[in-house]
Image (cartoon, rainbow, N blue to C red; front, side):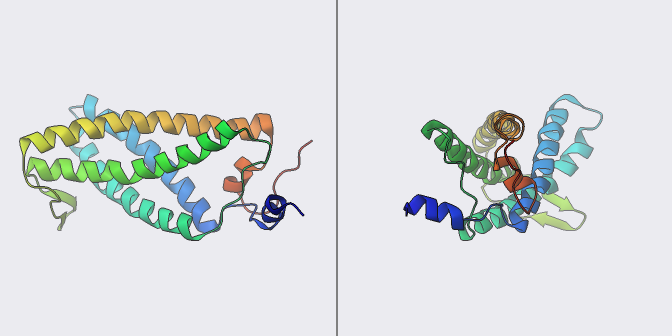
Length: 190
């Protein structure tokens, strides 16, 4: 018996419930953060309110990303379809790890940016985060630029990820989208 085929037959068909729940919750949170971040840069009237929303949402994403990464490392994932090309498999795996890196890096850069600015990092009334870098205009500028640049990278990676998911759901009609969308049996090809 082919070892890959045997492994494929015993592999889970869907991501576990925690992975699926975190995926969809964080997808909504990340999309919200991208739009909140863009609005913060363009709105003077709502800027303070948006910043007050942006900080705790970013830290929540950081904490959930850590949980999600631990779950990913310690749980089995469904295999990609056997008929994908080498470059598609590489792109799928690379894009997932890039998303994890961005989900961890973006909040840390935002936290470092505020720390370097020397301002209190208020999560909510009565709870502030400690600074993670010393106050420094140079560090602030670097963190601000990196956070802004990586927001564009995150936006691009999310668009590619969403496009690939829809291609699998609507064109290939394989089990890739269903493995994250729901539990149970994958859809059958017509």
